[in-house]
Image (cartoon, rainbow, N blue to C red; front, side, top):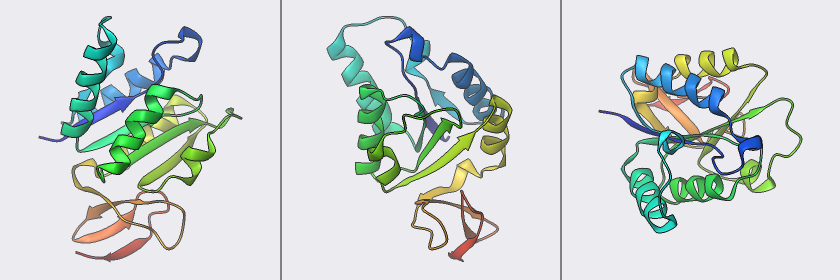
Length: 164
């Protein structure tokens, strides 16, 4: 069973990306991937949230995050995933002008720009999420690859990286 952790702003209602989360959850679950989405959980004490979310990041096989607007919690979840060498798939809206330099400079991630939620759905559905790994691409700035037919391909540019 593959487990994905979905990270997106929760606290500030104006920054929430509920439509994004719904699209991601549906696309992942239709591909047999279990999703932990704290956005769907009710209120809890801060220490409970911290322990629960850290535990689920640790259990996950990869993390997907919406990063169009800065969020401390999302940043912490991304950093933990990177430190644990888990593939990190980051999405941001083409309309966003606030992308963090920490996000763009991070290793261990792939960064996808989207114009619409249809783009998000299409990107997620084309990836081989059962076989992601952290690996630098020499052709682009991605650090996430997928294994397809015993070959490793960059998830961003699609170029072959090497054989398995």
